Image (cartoon, rainbow, N blue to C red; front, side, top):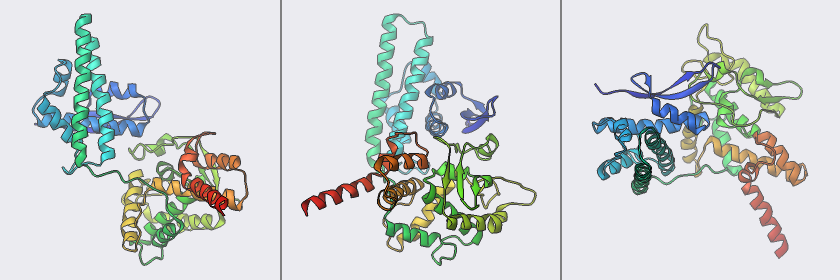
Length: 386
Protein backbone atom coordinates (compact mmCIF):
# COMPACT_ATOMS: atom_id res chain seq x y z
CA UNK A 1 0.00 0.00 0.00
CA UNK A 2 1.41 3.36 -1.04
CA UNK A 3 2.15 5.86 1.74
CA UNK A 4 0.00 8.98 2.04
CA UNK A 5 1.72 12.35 2.33
CA UNK A 6 -0.04 15.49 3.51
CA UNK A 7 0.52 18.77 5.32
CA UNK A 8 -0.91 19.08 8.82
CA UNK A 9 -0.70 21.86 11.38
CA UNK A 10 0.24 20.96 14.93
CA UNK A 11 0.26 23.14 18.03
CA UNK A 12 3.35 23.75 20.10
CA UNK A 13 3.35 24.35 23.86
CA UNK A 14 2.49 28.04 23.26
CA UNK A 15 -0.59 27.02 21.22
CA UNK A 16 0.93 28.26 17.96
CA UNK A 17 0.25 26.23 14.83
CA UNK A 18 3.15 25.08 12.64
CA UNK A 19 2.96 23.08 9.38
CA UNK A 20 4.47 19.60 9.13
CA UNK A 21 4.85 17.18 6.25
CA UNK A 22 3.61 13.78 7.46
CA UNK A 23 3.76 10.31 5.95
CA UNK A 24 0.87 8.08 7.06
CA UNK A 25 0.24 10.46 9.94
CA UNK A 26 3.86 10.59 11.17
CA UNK A 27 5.89 13.82 10.71
CA UNK A 28 8.95 13.36 8.49
CA UNK A 29 12.12 14.23 10.39
CA UNK A 30 14.23 15.78 7.65
CA UNK A 31 11.58 18.18 6.27
CA UNK A 32 10.69 19.17 9.85
CA UNK A 33 14.31 20.02 10.68
CA UNK A 34 14.63 21.97 7.44
CA UNK A 35 11.38 23.93 7.96
CA UNK A 36 12.53 24.93 11.44
CA UNK A 37 15.90 26.10 10.11
CA UNK A 38 14.69 28.32 7.25
CA UNK A 39 12.76 30.56 9.70
CA UNK A 40 10.30 31.65 7.00
CA UNK A 41 6.80 33.07 7.59
CA UNK A 42 4.28 30.30 8.25
CA UNK A 43 2.53 30.65 4.90
CA UNK A 44 5.87 30.47 3.07
CA UNK A 45 6.94 27.51 5.19
CA UNK A 46 3.74 25.67 4.32
CA UNK A 47 4.13 26.42 0.59
CA UNK A 48 7.72 25.12 0.69
CA UNK A 49 6.64 21.93 2.47
CA UNK A 50 3.97 21.36 -0.17
CA UNK A 51 6.74 21.57 -2.76
CA UNK A 52 8.76 19.00 -0.82
CA UNK A 53 5.64 16.83 -0.65
CA UNK A 54 5.67 16.68 -4.45
CA UNK A 55 9.23 15.31 -4.35
CA UNK A 56 8.28 12.57 -1.87
CA UNK A 57 5.17 11.61 -3.87
CA UNK A 58 7.25 11.56 -7.04
CA UNK A 59 9.81 9.21 -5.45
CA UNK A 60 7.01 6.82 -4.46
CA UNK A 61 5.70 6.84 -8.04
CA UNK A 62 9.20 5.87 -9.21
CA UNK A 63 9.43 3.04 -6.63
CA UNK A 64 12.41 4.23 -4.62
CA UNK A 65 12.93 5.68 -1.15
CA UNK A 66 13.97 9.34 -1.32
CA UNK A 67 15.86 9.38 1.99
CA UNK A 68 18.04 6.45 0.88
CA UNK A 69 19.22 8.26 -2.26
CA UNK A 70 19.99 11.37 -0.23
CA UNK A 71 21.64 9.64 2.72
CA UNK A 72 23.87 7.58 0.40
CA UNK A 73 24.94 10.85 -1.24
CA UNK A 74 24.32 9.09 -4.55
CA UNK A 75 22.02 11.76 -5.90
CA UNK A 76 19.83 11.12 -8.92
CA UNK A 77 20.42 9.92 -12.45
CA UNK A 78 19.93 12.25 -15.39
CA UNK A 79 16.66 10.51 -16.22
CA UNK A 80 15.35 10.90 -12.68
CA UNK A 81 16.30 14.59 -12.55
CA UNK A 82 14.40 15.21 -15.79
CA UNK A 83 11.39 13.36 -14.40
CA UNK A 84 11.52 15.27 -11.10
CA UNK A 85 11.83 18.61 -12.89
CA UNK A 86 8.74 17.77 -14.96
CA UNK A 87 6.79 16.82 -11.82
CA UNK A 88 7.77 20.07 -10.10
CA UNK A 89 6.76 22.14 -13.12
CA UNK A 90 3.34 20.51 -13.42
CA UNK A 91 0.06 21.13 -11.63
CA UNK A 92 -2.00 18.48 -9.85
CA UNK A 93 -4.02 18.03 -13.04
CA UNK A 94 -0.88 17.37 -15.07
CA UNK A 95 -1.01 20.70 -16.89
CA UNK A 96 2.06 22.99 -16.90
CA UNK A 97 2.30 24.98 -13.69
CA UNK A 98 2.61 28.75 -13.78
CA UNK A 99 6.11 30.12 -14.19
CA UNK A 100 5.89 31.84 -10.81
CA UNK A 101 5.09 28.46 -9.23
CA UNK A 102 8.03 26.83 -11.04
CA UNK A 103 10.36 29.58 -9.83
CA UNK A 104 9.23 29.13 -6.21
CA UNK A 105 9.54 25.35 -6.41
CA UNK A 106 13.00 25.63 -7.90
CA UNK A 107 14.03 27.78 -4.96
CA UNK A 108 12.37 25.65 -2.27
CA UNK A 109 13.59 22.27 -3.58
CA UNK A 110 17.11 23.62 -4.15
CA UNK A 111 17.16 24.76 -0.53
CA UNK A 112 15.75 21.46 0.70
CA UNK A 113 18.11 19.23 -1.27
CA UNK A 114 21.09 21.37 -0.23
CA UNK A 115 20.05 21.08 3.41
CA UNK A 116 19.36 17.35 3.20
CA UNK A 117 22.61 16.48 1.41
CA UNK A 118 24.67 18.64 3.78
CA UNK A 119 22.87 17.06 6.74
CA UNK A 120 24.06 13.60 5.75
CA UNK A 121 27.51 14.83 4.69
CA UNK A 122 27.91 16.25 8.20
CA UNK A 123 26.79 12.99 9.81
CA UNK A 124 29.03 10.71 7.76
CA UNK A 125 32.59 9.97 8.83
CA UNK A 126 34.34 11.39 5.79
CA UNK A 127 37.88 12.49 5.28
CA UNK A 128 38.48 16.08 4.23
CA UNK A 129 38.98 14.93 0.64
CA UNK A 130 35.78 12.85 0.69
CA UNK A 131 33.87 15.68 2.29
CA UNK A 132 35.04 18.16 -0.36
CA UNK A 133 34.02 15.74 -3.12
CA UNK A 134 30.63 15.14 -1.49
CA UNK A 135 30.02 18.88 -1.28
CA UNK A 136 30.96 19.20 -4.95
CA UNK A 137 28.56 16.40 -5.89
CA UNK A 138 25.74 17.97 -3.86
CA UNK A 139 26.22 21.30 -5.58
CA UNK A 140 26.20 19.57 -8.97
CA UNK A 141 22.97 17.70 -8.21
CA UNK A 142 21.15 20.90 -7.27
CA UNK A 143 22.60 22.76 -10.26
CA UNK A 144 21.49 20.05 -12.71
CA UNK A 145 17.97 20.00 -11.25
CA UNK A 146 17.74 23.78 -11.68
CA UNK A 147 18.73 23.49 -15.34
CA UNK A 148 16.13 20.79 -15.97
CA UNK A 149 13.49 22.91 -14.20
CA UNK A 150 14.40 25.93 -16.31
CA UNK A 151 13.86 23.84 -19.40
CA UNK A 152 10.61 22.30 -18.11
CA UNK A 153 9.19 25.69 -17.12
CA UNK A 154 9.40 26.95 -20.72
CA UNK A 155 6.04 25.29 -21.34
CA UNK A 156 4.49 26.98 -18.31
CA UNK A 157 2.04 29.86 -18.48
CA UNK A 158 3.68 33.25 -18.08
CA UNK A 159 3.08 35.02 -14.80
CA UNK A 160 0.21 37.46 -14.93
CA UNK A 161 0.89 40.08 -12.26
CA UNK A 162 -1.73 41.70 -10.06
CA UNK A 163 -1.90 45.29 -11.25
CA UNK A 164 -3.79 48.20 -9.77
CA UNK A 165 -7.11 49.15 -11.32
CA UNK A 166 -8.19 52.42 -12.93
CA UNK A 167 -11.14 54.38 -11.59
CA UNK A 168 -13.35 53.14 -14.42
CA UNK A 169 -12.33 49.53 -13.76
CA UNK A 170 -13.09 49.95 -10.07
CA UNK A 171 -16.48 51.32 -11.06
CA UNK A 172 -17.25 48.16 -13.05
CA UNK A 173 -16.11 45.87 -10.23
CA UNK A 174 -18.08 47.78 -7.58
CA UNK A 175 -21.19 47.64 -9.77
CA UNK A 176 -20.87 43.84 -9.94
CA UNK A 177 -20.24 43.50 -6.20
CA UNK A 178 -23.29 45.65 -5.38
CA UNK A 179 -25.80 43.36 -3.59
CA UNK A 180 -28.63 44.63 -5.80
CA UNK A 181 -26.71 44.23 -9.08
CA UNK A 182 -28.19 42.05 -11.81
CA UNK A 183 -24.58 41.17 -12.76
CA UNK A 184 -23.68 39.87 -9.29
CA UNK A 185 -22.61 36.21 -9.81
CA UNK A 186 -23.72 35.13 -6.33
CA UNK A 187 -27.33 34.16 -5.70
CA UNK A 188 -27.85 34.45 -1.93
CA UNK A 189 -28.32 38.01 -0.69
CA UNK A 190 -26.35 37.29 2.51
CA UNK A 191 -23.31 36.21 0.46
CA UNK A 192 -23.67 39.28 -1.73
CA UNK A 193 -23.60 41.58 1.30
CA UNK A 194 -20.63 39.76 2.83
CA UNK A 195 -18.62 39.99 -0.40
CA UNK A 196 -19.58 43.63 -0.98
CA UNK A 197 -18.40 44.65 2.50
CA UNK A 198 -15.12 42.76 2.04
CA UNK A 199 -14.52 44.53 -1.27
CA UNK A 200 -15.25 47.96 0.27
CA UNK A 201 -12.98 47.25 3.24
CA UNK A 202 -10.16 46.26 0.89
CA UNK A 203 -10.30 49.67 -0.77
CA UNK A 204 -10.85 51.61 2.46
CA UNK A 205 -8.09 50.08 4.59
CA UNK A 206 -5.32 48.75 2.30
CA UNK A 207 -5.78 45.46 4.16
CA UNK A 208 -4.13 42.24 3.13
CA UNK A 209 -6.17 39.17 2.31
CA UNK A 210 -5.24 37.48 5.60
CA UNK A 211 -6.10 40.63 7.55
CA UNK A 212 -9.58 40.69 6.02
CA UNK A 213 -10.45 37.11 6.99
CA UNK A 214 -9.08 37.61 10.51
CA UNK A 215 -11.31 40.61 11.27
CA UNK A 216 -13.66 40.12 14.20
CA UNK A 217 -16.91 41.86 15.06
CA UNK A 218 -15.28 43.80 17.91
CA UNK A 219 -12.76 45.24 15.44
CA UNK A 220 -15.52 47.33 13.85
CA UNK A 221 -16.55 50.59 15.49
CA UNK A 222 -19.62 52.06 13.78
CA UNK A 223 -19.90 55.01 16.21
CA UNK A 224 -19.57 58.75 15.56
CA UNK A 225 -15.94 58.31 14.43
CA UNK A 226 -16.07 54.87 12.77
CA UNK A 227 -12.91 52.79 12.53
CA UNK A 228 -11.68 49.31 11.69
CA UNK A 229 -9.02 47.84 13.95
CA UNK A 230 -6.51 45.48 12.31
CA UNK A 231 -4.80 43.64 15.12
CA UNK A 232 -3.10 40.38 15.97
CA UNK A 233 -5.83 37.72 16.18
CA UNK A 234 -6.24 35.35 19.06
CA UNK A 235 -4.73 31.90 18.64
CA UNK A 236 -8.26 30.51 18.78
CA UNK A 237 -9.35 32.63 15.83
CA UNK A 238 -6.24 31.76 13.80
CA UNK A 239 -6.80 28.11 14.59
CA UNK A 240 -10.34 28.12 13.21
CA UNK A 241 -8.78 27.48 9.82
CA UNK A 242 -5.48 25.79 9.05
CA UNK A 243 -4.77 28.27 6.23
CA UNK A 244 -1.85 30.13 7.77
CA UNK A 245 -3.67 33.47 7.88
CA UNK A 246 -1.66 35.91 10.00
CA UNK A 247 -0.55 39.52 10.18
CA UNK A 248 2.77 40.34 8.52
CA UNK A 249 3.30 43.75 10.08
CA UNK A 250 2.09 46.14 12.74
CA UNK A 251 -1.45 46.57 13.96
CA UNK A 252 -3.39 49.76 13.32
CA UNK A 253 -6.78 51.44 13.68
CA UNK A 254 -8.01 52.78 10.35
CA UNK A 255 -10.73 55.46 10.02
CA UNK A 256 -13.57 54.68 7.63
CA UNK A 257 -16.48 56.67 6.21
CA UNK A 258 -19.93 56.75 7.79
CA UNK A 259 -21.29 55.22 4.60
CA UNK A 260 -19.03 52.16 4.88
CA UNK A 261 -19.77 51.88 8.62
CA UNK A 262 -23.48 51.84 7.81
CA UNK A 263 -23.00 49.13 5.18
CA UNK A 264 -20.97 46.95 7.57
CA UNK A 265 -23.58 47.49 10.28
CA UNK A 266 -26.31 46.33 7.89
CA UNK A 267 -24.30 43.19 7.09
CA UNK A 268 -23.67 42.41 10.77
CA UNK A 269 -27.21 43.01 12.00
CA UNK A 270 -29.18 41.60 9.05
CA UNK A 271 -27.14 39.06 7.09
CA UNK A 272 -24.21 37.70 9.11
CA UNK A 273 -26.40 35.49 11.33
CA UNK A 274 -27.61 33.61 8.25
CA UNK A 275 -24.16 32.01 7.94
CA UNK A 276 -24.24 30.56 11.47
CA UNK A 277 -25.64 27.06 12.03
CA UNK A 278 -27.68 26.46 15.17
CA UNK A 279 -25.66 26.51 18.41
CA UNK A 280 -22.49 27.71 16.67
CA UNK A 281 -20.94 30.93 17.95
CA UNK A 282 -18.22 32.87 16.18
CA UNK A 283 -16.51 36.22 16.66
CA UNK A 284 -15.26 36.36 13.05
CA UNK A 285 -16.71 39.12 10.90
CA UNK A 286 -16.76 37.23 7.61
CA UNK A 287 -18.09 33.69 7.72
CA UNK A 288 -18.23 30.81 5.29
CA UNK A 289 -21.67 29.88 3.96
CA UNK A 290 -20.61 26.22 4.09
CA UNK A 291 -19.91 25.74 7.79
CA UNK A 292 -20.32 29.11 9.53
CA UNK A 293 -16.68 29.36 10.55
CA UNK A 294 -14.40 32.19 9.48
CA UNK A 295 -13.71 32.46 5.80
CA UNK A 296 -10.62 30.80 4.32
CA UNK A 297 -8.06 33.29 2.99
CA UNK A 298 -8.03 31.39 -0.31
CA UNK A 299 -11.80 31.84 -0.57
CA UNK A 300 -11.21 35.52 -1.31
CA UNK A 301 -9.31 34.56 -4.45
CA UNK A 302 -12.22 32.38 -5.57
CA UNK A 303 -14.69 35.21 -4.96
CA UNK A 304 -12.53 37.64 -6.93
CA UNK A 305 -12.20 35.15 -9.77
CA UNK A 306 -15.97 34.81 -10.14
CA UNK A 307 -16.38 38.58 -10.24
CA UNK A 308 -13.47 38.90 -12.69
CA UNK A 309 -15.12 36.44 -15.10
CA UNK A 310 -18.37 38.40 -14.95
CA UNK A 311 -16.49 41.68 -15.44
CA UNK A 312 -14.73 40.30 -18.53
CA UNK A 313 -18.12 39.88 -20.18
CA UNK A 314 -18.55 43.63 -19.66
CA UNK A 315 -15.23 44.59 -21.26
CA UNK A 316 -12.96 44.33 -18.19
CA UNK A 317 -9.46 43.28 -19.33
CA UNK A 318 -7.48 43.42 -16.11
CA UNK A 319 -6.88 40.86 -13.36
CA UNK A 320 -8.91 41.10 -10.14
CA UNK A 321 -6.94 39.92 -7.13
CA UNK A 322 -6.72 40.90 -3.41
CA UNK A 323 -3.14 42.11 -3.91
CA UNK A 324 -4.21 44.26 -6.85
CA UNK A 325 -6.94 45.86 -4.73
CA UNK A 326 -4.34 46.70 -2.06
CA UNK A 327 -2.17 48.38 -4.70
CA UNK A 328 -5.19 50.21 -6.09
CA UNK A 329 -6.17 51.46 -2.64
CA UNK A 330 -2.62 52.69 -1.97
CA UNK A 331 -2.60 54.67 -5.22
CA UNK A 332 -6.04 56.13 -4.57
CA UNK A 333 -5.01 57.21 -1.09
CA UNK A 334 -1.79 58.83 -2.30
CA UNK A 335 -3.71 60.77 -4.97
CA UNK A 336 -6.25 62.02 -2.41
CA UNK A 337 -3.56 63.06 0.04
CA UNK A 338 -1.38 64.92 -2.47
CA UNK A 339 -4.20 66.46 -4.49
CA UNK A 340 -7.24 66.90 -2.28
CA UNK A 341 -5.81 67.01 1.25
CA UNK A 342 -2.76 69.03 0.13
CA UNK A 343 -0.35 67.23 2.48
CA UNK A 344 3.39 67.00 1.88
CA UNK A 345 4.93 63.95 0.23
CA UNK A 346 6.64 63.00 3.49
CA UNK A 347 3.35 63.20 5.40
CA UNK A 348 1.62 61.20 2.65
CA UNK A 349 4.19 58.42 2.92
CA UNK A 350 3.81 58.31 6.71
CA UNK A 351 0.03 58.03 6.40
CA UNK A 352 0.21 55.32 3.74
CA UNK A 353 2.80 53.42 5.81
CA UNK A 354 0.42 53.45 8.76
CA UNK A 355 -2.63 52.50 6.69
CA UNK A 356 -0.83 49.65 4.93
CA UNK A 357 0.72 48.29 8.10
CA UNK A 358 4.27 48.87 6.89
CA UNK A 359 7.18 49.87 9.07
CA UNK A 360 8.09 53.55 9.05
CA UNK A 361 10.28 54.37 6.05
CA UNK A 362 9.39 51.12 4.27
CA UNK A 363 10.19 50.91 0.56
CA UNK A 364 6.81 49.19 0.09
CA UNK A 365 5.03 52.56 0.04
CA UNK A 366 6.89 53.64 -3.10
CA UNK A 367 6.55 50.17 -4.59
CA UNK A 368 2.78 50.16 -4.18
CA UNK A 369 2.24 53.72 -5.43
CA UNK A 370 4.41 53.75 -8.55
CA UNK A 371 1.46 54.60 -10.82
CA UNK A 372 0.62 57.73 -8.85
CA UNK A 373 4.25 58.84 -8.79
CA UNK A 374 4.46 58.20 -12.55
CA UNK A 375 1.38 60.37 -13.12
CA UNK A 376 2.88 63.19 -11.01
CA UNK A 377 6.14 63.00 -12.97
CA UNK A 378 4.20 63.02 -16.24
CA UNK A 379 2.34 66.18 -15.25
CA UNK A 380 5.60 67.89 -14.30
CA UNK A 381 7.22 66.97 -17.61
CA UNK A 382 4.23 68.09 -19.64
CA UNK A 383 4.09 71.35 -17.69
CA UNK A 384 7.75 72.02 -18.55
CA UNK A 385 7.12 71.45 -22.25
CA UNK A 386 4.19 73.86 -22.23
